[in-house]
Length: 225
Length: 354
Image (cartoon, rainbow over all chains, first blue to last red; front, side, top):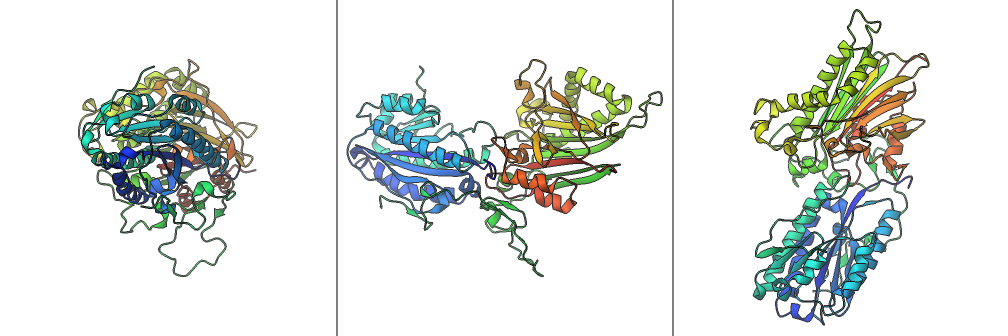
């Protein structure tokens, strides 16, 4: 490690549900509207630019990294999501585990001091696959992330699965009919969380500074084991 | 809406890049002739690794990243140098980028003093010591810019008082024996402020949570006169995580003090206010060694995984012997991505005749 800077870095992953139901409820459109705004917000903060990296994954039948882990100012145009298929949480967790492992190993090899990653997982529906095995594998990994979950639509009405997935906090939308509008609030909260957490992160475990409440969302008690 | 993102860089996103290899230390003036009219946008600090985004703008930029402080003196730079005989001491505290961005003051502080043992009955009469204390406001402690200054100040005053009464061995014994009483008195003095006076909080400390004032303390007492073998025995105390290093043989050696009396770092050692125990250690310093007390805004970036970082390697070279005040301020104002906390570094050198 000699000759390295020991620079500290926080990693944030946004996991977007792009299943078929996200089209009619306005979720796809709202995510695609909000991502450029999120990018502009983060890129305007000089501490976030230097001290954090952002990645975005989308999932439905399968999962895909639509924004590889990147410094926000290295992105000219944010990617978008598009509706298709079902809601396979397990595909997202499998890809997330491999992606985080690769990203963290790469950054550590370059001499970075990497804080535990934080995942923002958002969905409008119940899982349609056997998600628990890949989730447990993700959580058993040495780079297991913190997980914040956001439920809109059906997943807001019945957030029992998301409450199992979240490790830090689970938010559930009260208004099933306006999933798109709810996701706009989610994106704003994600931006604020990234800025605050990045600014406050110093030696020792990083605190993820989550908002105590999000407009029109309830905070769901996390599952106890 | 495109499925794909578009990179602002020709080479694509970071994770897909080949490793760029160790970044070089960039000397901004780097051997080039110094211009007659310096570029007023130039970054004057040394850059380690990639330049910071914050550093790409001058402090007066319309982006407003470097905000004046609304509540207290910003203390963008606090600096002292001085000698006690052959001992040379330089201390600098610099406001961190995160506090500049928020318009908040520097929450680090430090102090330097000297004292003389005055007991005419003692064989140690006339012995002199240098005392250095640093304090780092903890986390989001709202009033710690004030308490850190007070803790550093009162520590110096209290140690000086003890040093006047006791020989050095007795001094160490007294502090370690009565550490609880020492810390209680330090807390009492720090919390007994007059509201609104000299940046003190606007309400009494009895109406504030202690967390809003909490800070660390690290101090060192160094005798002016060396032992017969040329070494000096320094005494250090720690409450919290502000680190100390010995600079010897061209490298930084973290001073890992003995644990507290229970062999553990207790929660009470996280912050000095209300603490009942501190960690103390004695340290032998050779005539060519130097001692650094720092806040974690500096100390965290000197070493990584047991090896010196680029910054650590360079400062070990630059600070092997005393440096000029302005050079020292520039050194502590280094540019390094993510090093955005307040920075304090107090160095103690020995300039004995060889």
